[in-house]
Length: 287
Ligand code: NDP
Image (cartoon, rainbow, N blue to C red):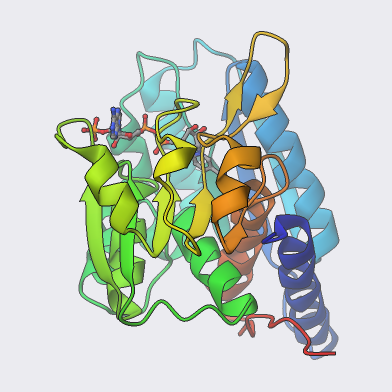
């Protein structure tokens, strides 16, 4: 199993270590503004977890909770203030936003060097062009996860199911940069099964349980399940049937305890890096 709790813990330890050293040498402790608009219960849970990770990573969280009827202009004004605030190195606006607020306008209003989610068009463009910049956390975190376990994606056929701006597309770019041959499947892909069967590394990020039949997984494939779905029973599951897929896969991420915590830990890594602190990616010890 690819253990997201272990890897996220190792990332948070690296960030804590580096930020503490930075502060001890006279640097300013990095600050992350965590902005939540409205009371969406899932968003509130994510935001709480991110704030907790800040404590573990030695990052000062500034919590800003706004009512659901906050106007787009008020949110833009707040971001403008945060863009100019020297105590804040990272700005995170939790998505989704209420429907009257245009998400792209918000993500692109964050100063690109404080855009720790990596969603600003400038940062996505830099990722596409293989230039250094703040990178979307889930895709970057998955690369850290693969590296942690010594899994080399070079030359492998990686199939990504899902093509969203926040997961699928940046994932394709990350794996392409790592030397993989990448296929991205989406809503209009006609024979999903045929592509999944070819995947040496399979990343599933749709948000529909069972969208990929676990029987299609090739023997020995590496399966990364990004999906987070809450069943009527309250149980949290991924997009794959874990038990079935685990019988065929060489490595697989669980849900919960897989990609989710790594995404959050990578947000801390991005925040420290936005503050100019260099973080070394952790690797699994061979002992
Ligand atoms: P979106 O709804 O933005 O994107 C879903 C993607 O799936 C779209 O690209 C869509 O294609 C594609 N899709 C829809 N139907 C099919 C289909 N039948 N076959 C193939 N592809 C299809 O979701 P997100 O990317 O934001 O999130 C995906 C999942 O990952 C969710 O469960 C979310 O909760 C979870 N998530 C988990 C994170 C973590 O840290 N673990 C972080 C972020 C998200 P098209 O583009 O054509 O519409």
